[in-house]
Length: 115
Image 1 (cartoon, helix red, strand yellow):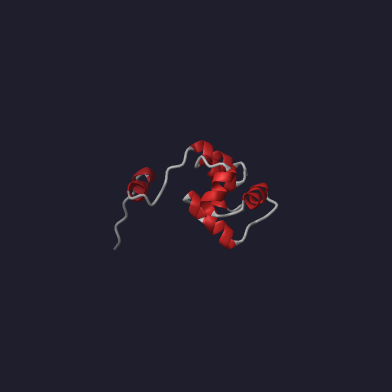
Image 2 (image 1 turned 90 degrees about the vertical axis):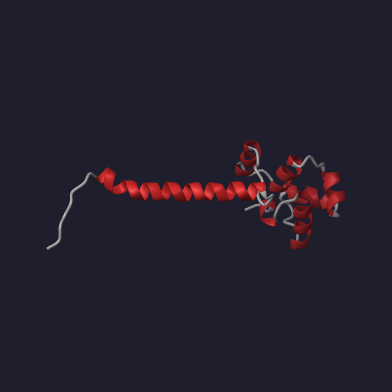
């Protein structure tokens, strides 16, 4: 015969909630370690807000890194006019061009491509 125990739902759910909290805590520690190792970067909310609002990612990152279009052109080796066109959305840029720009800004190509 099987024994049955009746307990309140909250008590039944508690172990699962503790496990989820522990997983969140572990994820937070992992992120902190990656930030400390220089593998991740904290970005101010004003930068994230601009990206979320649909501004040109290239422009947002360029301005966050305190580069003018001319400075980014010099650092990346990409023509300034091409940078203007990419920021305006008139040119998507080749993978090679985007790689140069991303490297100069210290971000990934995914960070500067419009989606």
